[in-house]
Length: 258
Ligand SMILES: CC(C)(COP(=O)(O)OP(=O)(O)OC[C@H]1O[C@@H](n2cnc3c(N)ncnc32)[C@H](O)[C@@H]1OP(=O)(O)O)[C@@H](O)C(=O)NCCC(=O)NCCS
Image (cartoon, rainbow, N blue to C red):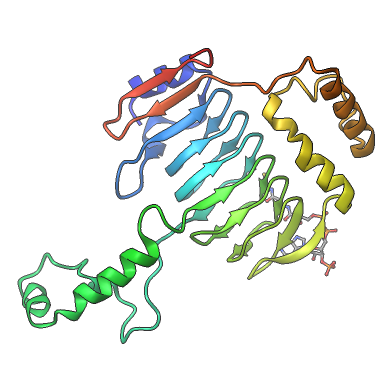
């Protein structure tokens, strides 16, 4: 990242806990990254459309790509590898030369001219993994442990926990704890009725306002207190300032008041 990008992010209260050369926007291509205030990036490469307030991620060899959104209040440890490109496994070769991605050598170009199947293979690849397909979605209040691999297209629900060093190849349900290679169900954080109430409240929508003053160490007490606060009707979902890093590298701050 550039120093001028860091300075604008700081104006929107977005912190970058790494040196400029340790943070990269876009992986392969430059996308548009939108960050809510109070989020924090550490070292890493990021191809994420949207990151919510109070979420932090990065450190070590982080590569987070093909991600549509990371919700609010997510704790994402270092060395996460997410959204890496897949290769076909059902064709003669899994090598990506055969989708036309190796065109820089003369004899390979001749091969393409004589082997039109690469176009068919590329069309199948684009259909399956086109940019807007197979994006990872990470909910709110998600904790992802150290060194996790997340496959393209996986959805990790609100409140979920992914154990360290897991390989996540399937969706993770809200408030589910998963772990292992491949990641499997360990338990739910709370009972089904508690999870249903948490999903109804979506406390993170209100920033810190709904949870302020609540005994969040006890889920039943906290739920009742938050439900009462919501019933009083005074608390509205909180919008935050958002910094958008454009594909050109320009950073634009959109005020919450807009
Ligand atoms: C997943 C995790 C949160 C579970 O913690 P916990 O609720 O205290 O779980 P327990 O120690 O009671 O273990 C419950 C079961 O999950 C298994 N388990 C725990 N962590 C696991 C992991 N990372 N991968 C696979 N299985 C795991 C345990 O072996 C145990 O299995 P068993 O019931 O068959 O004996 C924790 O082990 C973990 O991975 N923490 C991540 C720490 C981290 O990376 N921090 C980075 C800083 S953000």
